Length: 283
Image (cartoon, rainbow, N blue to C red; front, side, top):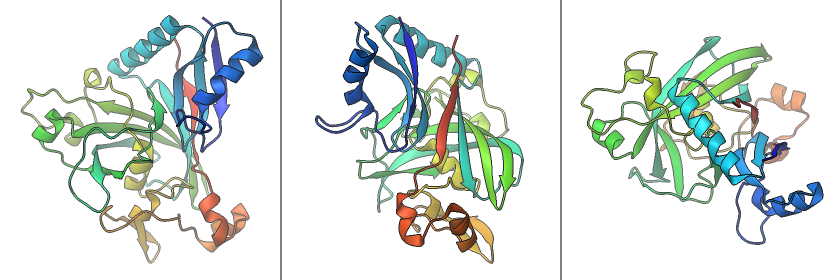
């Protein structure tokens, strides 16, 4: 079947309610415009708040084969999806990995919640917690029981600084999420050493994984109005704030950066998230 690649703007969801604008609602018109007889299926697409590559297929079997290819690639220790992000702040190391547990948590409550309907994100593309009364929070040292129940997922992102100027950086990001076997009695490898068994990493990325991981680097993504409040500063030195003590708010930027962006503080809430799905590896 035919494969079609598009570039999605930030803010466009993959799925939506009947009558709402979404990528899925646009597919019938796109199929007619291209003169395709078969329906178009979404193979991979970035989450609502992200921009970037959308891969479509007009063949159901091709879609399933490609999705299986992505799963097999993750099991081999490869990164099928590559993102670019602009961050406020420059990582201390030029290249590295962020590894932490992630879970859903009720906003304003420490109790973890399972089974939230995630909005957007397919395959290796982190989705969004938008529309749920939940937030995605890091769990630095998850217990074996929470991992076995899959309340907490082990998440891994490889990053590389491509350039840096004026206190901002352009990063390459490659995310993975790893399943932890229920019968294990050991601590997850990535919490002990930089390496992690590729065979465990067959799951797609966790919703909002990249945004949370960038805050753990103390370099939130530009336009992240959900997690950037978790990075505070004292005398110009960044530090991490727990989600319980730092509720979501419009990202705060210094006057110099606002001037370079030609934005006023009142316009900041319109600034989109600067995370872009740039590349997908195909067989």
